[in-house]
Length: 73
Figure (tube, rainbow, N blue to C red):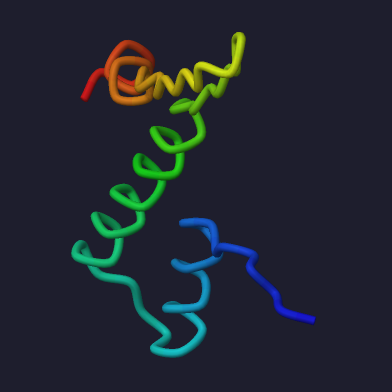
């Protein structure tokens, strides 16, 4: 069985700390960037509709907008 579970930013930061016994500003910024990308990806959606055999595909990309409105970046 394949494990496709992604690591959260917090899990990644803890792993770094456990391996090195330190966390620097670069690690913190990396974790923040990972968290932002996870939030944006979760908010983005892809919708598929098939009306009378006409395949309609629409990607809704509101993740970046949501992140900026919620977290101000």
